Image (cartoon, rainbow, N blue to C red; front, side, top):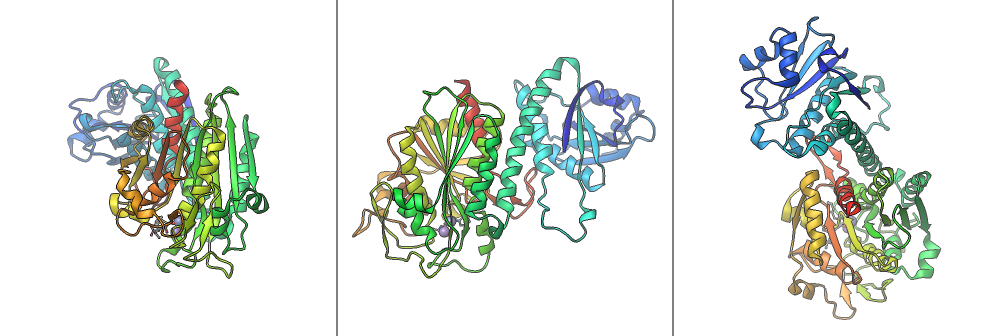
Length: 499
Ligand code: BES
Ligand code: MN
Ligand code: ZN
């Protein structure tokens, strides 16, 4: 959908629908709402007065203007109580109303953004409106061939701004556009089935970003990985005919001498569990086991589009985990890229193996900080539920930065401890470490394992197993791939860039 920002008055818009977002407890109408109410002979006050529209979060009322205004319809959407309003409610409201209008067959709409909904958050408010609309309208349709003509799409949203707010709205709508495009790109990568999203194809998709300024991509193939001794990644890949790749995607927007921020993303294009095979039920969802890697690719795309003055390196180890004849097996011992040895007790704990090699490799970039994202453990879903990212790491300042970025983007992040005791669980009898620590604290022992391969720099691990994929519609995340982590990383990076 195109978004156009224009100067003018919403009441004058010749649109299929004009959208107004209203609080639940506003005693009397003000601003644009008051103006439209007057012009329309009390259309809005009637809806409110009769109780049809109360302004509850994401509540929607659509009525015909019947000539009272140039626009054909008036769409009201609720923001909930003024005191309880936040960026999430704004994103949700715009996502809901846009989806509702699309369902009616409306292809084009107009709205005005009140940048004073939240005190001191003009920029974020403008961004949230556009983000909510764009992310809420996402649909993944490339494989639908029957009834394609019935697919509905919204073509255009016009944001009408008055002169004093025009520039803040214009620049933040543009920012939202770039970020939402990156999120939707990531959702596409994740939604694609594993037969059409192999490590090779994922690497190709990353490579396509090099048409952007300051972006470069190197793909380390199987023979190179062998030469380097990336044996943990190679072990996971050994059961599949698909070649593994280590994708190195770099954005050089900073000064030459600036140390890079390294983002590492788990890129399992399919995780069957390998010899320790998973149950059939829901195994299909394991096409999403590259969500961390996809988020890293998306964050770098957005950073490049926003031209952030930073150096960022993305490392995405990509492979399948299959139980082929040459697959690695429980009991195998691997000498990882770091030189440390790993006893494989469960081939389904493969994410930490490929990350071990990538995290060790990250140190060679002398990073300012390393952040990894991975759909790493089912245990994270047991601990925190479907909607929450588990955060673990070694550096309080970096953890704080991630937490504060999450406050802005609405991605839910909760820290788990990484105490000494947990490290006992991953000691091996005959190698340095084993790749599982048993059922207790599975998310933590996985992170403890990763920590063994992290160099002497700030590091944070984000376990996105829960929110990467959603089986029910959320306000601005239609069911399916969420693209979680992209906005979080971009917000974090934007803050770093301001320093
Ligand atoms: N990719 C899975 C984790 C996962 C499970 C993500 C469900 C999203 C939804 C990971 O590779 C895995 O299989 N982990 C095992 C580890 C265990 C064998 C120690 C798990 O969580 O069961
Ligand atoms: Mn697994
Ligand atoms: Zn996995």
